[in-house]
Image 1 (tube, rainbow, N blue to C red):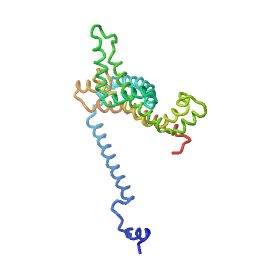
Image 2 (cartoon, rainbow, N blue to C red):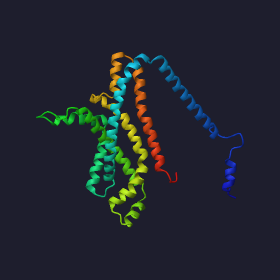
Image 3 (tube, rainbow, N blue to C red):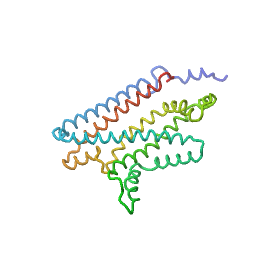
Image 4 (cartoon, rainbow, N blue to C red):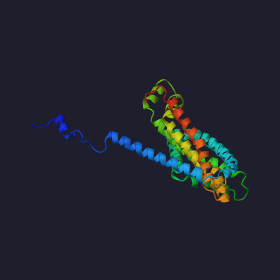
Length: 277
């Protein structure tokens, strides 16, 4: 007579004391041990750097330069981030548009700026646009600053647009049908029904892109903008001290990214209020 499923399970079940090597409890303790060793290594490395390789007399003298650079970076981040969010919503709406021309243009925009390096895009804006003025003087004097904002905005608009598109597509189609059945126009249904839900769905991806935007400002050193990496290079060239400015740069970026990440997590929690998690 054929064995039942229960009988087969009894045969296959290992005897007591003969469990597999990777039990749940062992995996838990292995994970804790690996995490502990990694943390201990990082702490030891930081202690070694801070006690043996950082020149605190030099640190006091260079901090004002890094503060100025940090303020400049923060200003560029705020302007570029706000513009990227605004235009990203428009690009995201274009990506889900039923109009072929609008959908095609927004798709080509996203594919170009996601498919080419940000450094290349910065060079196109910084060097390419002034080259168009062949018979006259380029009218903008502080072009490197403007080029930095334009380049970062164009690049991150594409990524935020894709995040908005994904957020819109994740909203159930019945929401749109319900809004239209109530007499709402397409614009009103998008404004009052779809986009609020899409924002909640896309918030994590948008927040991640804003953190990447902070780190992308390090590329602005190629535009001769006195941001954090430029100041680091100047200090290193003048003093031949690498670790002292490295520590300052690390802290400066974390001063921006850690509160930004905390803000995004808080917004996610507020957006998820009242919903099943």
